[in-house]
Image (cartoon, rainbow, N blue to C red):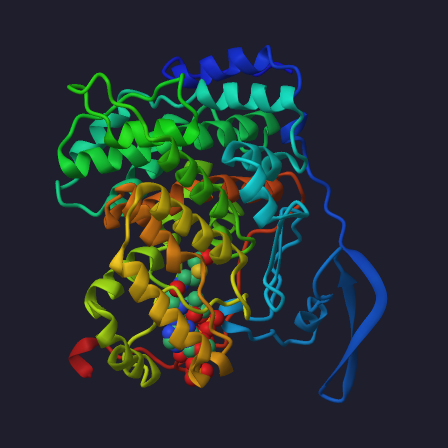
Length: 462
Ligand code: CMC
């Protein structure tokens, strides 16, 4: 393999190319082949007294899907706001069984990955499809570690933001700005360029996330350190300052951080991942696509929920106020943040691991957090109250992550940034998967309910 960079400005790409040209085994980033199987069965739809046969396909796990394309030829669309029942793509990356509370990455249960693996190994798995051997893992870790620095000109983008800008606003803008650094020399139709992009993103996103924090508190940016592992390096860039040359990362916190990254690495076709696929389907620059994913993640119904959970706990204040708050939830004045999920109608398996991690971290640090007690009380009521039981509302990953992040010392405004950091590998894995297969531009249709055609009247005659 040989990749020729064509931009003199693109130092990082040249370094990457030099490295990759000596890196023979890039099989961990090879193309994916799509293979939904026809069941031979057909769904029959009767429309205007005509019968339309719609093919049914099966995957390896999960419900079958009905191919509805032929409805178009009969002058109808399907209507499914919020994509409640619509599969928009085939994918081999992640599987969720929401009724059973199962989450598999490339077939491996999330609890096993979180307990026995680490984040970069999960990154390799998501990108490649298989777990690495020890040698492959060492090469992958070295590759990522060697690309953690960002172009020095990227620092200047931060100065354009107000001091009090929300770190997610800064993250969204700065990751989008990466597209300006990697555009002319990046061909999305070139598999090697796509693979380099994936490595760059996984490597640089913690650096950018930590810079967002440092900018918000007015401290100097810390350069990444190659002698630290992924999570340690992130905590170092977050909390070290140049004046404290002896700064040491607490290994308990680094382990918890790595676990949090692992639990957020991918989650199938959620709102942000679908956004990245949608943006990517136009052939757009991948860094701009990831910025679009970050924007979609920010909302409180999605990744912004972790920040919203802590705000909610602050608002409730003490355990005595819980019943009154729950009444407001049931009358739909407010939502119980960190509860409910579009897909999980059972315990979110990530929340189970997150709760165990939460207990471990608080015990190891000797913290007894009254907010954990409050969260436990909310959970106890919710799991027994018919409002939540009938609607199958269980705690999701964000219910506990905020409490651990707080124990680690991460400010609330950075919670969703950390989610975005960890999810970047999932987004880019889906982007790679899409680009390695035949795909169509994402273009939903609509049920039009506006005016019928009418004649324009000039303003002086209205
Ligand atoms: N608190 C109170 N009621 C709720 C909640 C909640 N957190 N979530 C859903 N409901 C009710 C909802 O009002 C509706 O009631 P009804 O049938 O009477 O109209 C019913 O449950 C079904 O909810 P829905 O809004 O139709 O479900 P959805 O699939 O469209 O929304 C959700 C899923 C995650 C957006 C929603 O549950 C929610 O807003 N939860 C709180 C925010 C949150 O924690 N988000 C993090 C999701 S996990 C992290 C991630 O991967 O993004």
